[in-house]
Image 1 (cartoon, helix red, strand yellow):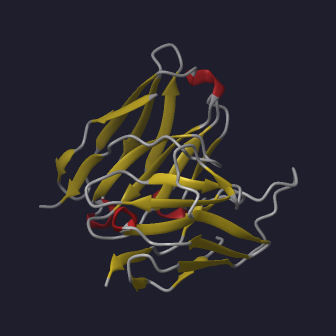
Image 2 (image 1 turned 180 degrees about the vertical axis):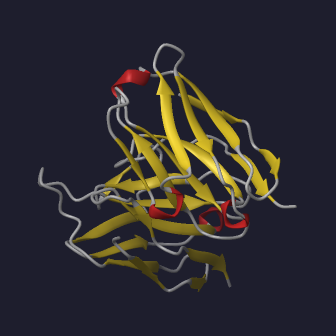
Length: 112
Length: 115
């Protein structure tokens, strides 16, 4: 199975400051169609996960432009340019290239 | 788009349970469908996926031989038959549209395996 490793697992951030989460995969996530199926989700307590980013860097509709995704191959990053209070939650990366699909362990973002 | 799970509950170890997911707002037959789960207080785990016509299915190793994913395209319905349940299967089970770019998730149904 492809192992997805996130860091850090806990991320206290000051409002208005940037934040960055790393996600590394044990195998390349480039699929045979040329796409890289790496998604980012945020989950708030008591809610279902919400997708923020798909195929590494594509922001979903309604997601603020302070969120950005980057990376390639096995190394990916989610960045928040200026953290706001509503950004708290647990962030997960997920690969959709290999079976079985796998998630990172999650990174808890909280306000200092 | 709506995905509504049902069928969760308390079951004894070794028992069985069948989860259902009824969908609306999109053409069911256009999409793979999946189940994912989340143990209380823990992270997400993908469980199984089924192709549009039901001819291809994939499972995480921990449920192979015990769980069966299926779909009824006439009823816009997805199911997960869970047999030989274990304590470690305790989780919220989510119905998910797709398997690569999984945007739509249901609200989940809680399965508790305990004596």
